[in-house]
Length: 198
Image (cartoon, rainbow, N blue to C red; front, side):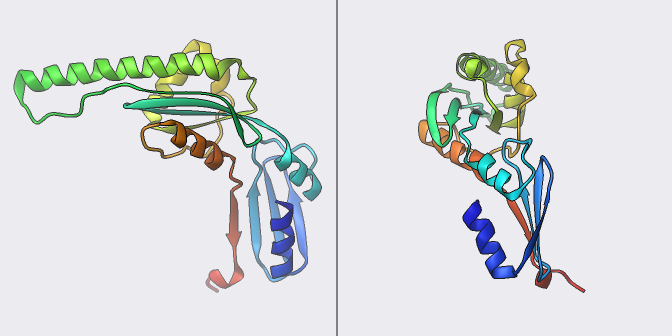
């Protein structure tokens, strides 16, 4: 973060900082603006140095990935995955059969999905609920994630969910590890005065 901010000033000239607990806006003399979303808000020390220290701190991040075909939950401290569990459940695909067969397949698919979400919930309760997380980032299927987080045992996690919502394939260990990297990425919105029409 510090190197990036120094490089931004080097490319665009003298910079000024407008720091809030959720965002840091860096305005350069050539008109360029960078808006940094503070990861794991709120930012307490409202300075550039405070932002850098905040980014470098070893925050406890939870990642919850749920899709019909699988689930994953992990706890990251700093960049290290310290606890995790992934699993999969077979959920039958759609069928072109009509009539009673189609209804029977739909019921079976719904039951399989319920079982998959129940398994994901139990893993979240075991891995994420006791982990004293600073933030939780979710991904996969939004409806599936919402179903898992509706469990009363996970009520404390719902309040610490942070963006982004990650689009992921069926969660495997490598997918969960990459999701942890993606969740920790710092998001910066850049505006170049040359990109703005007069």
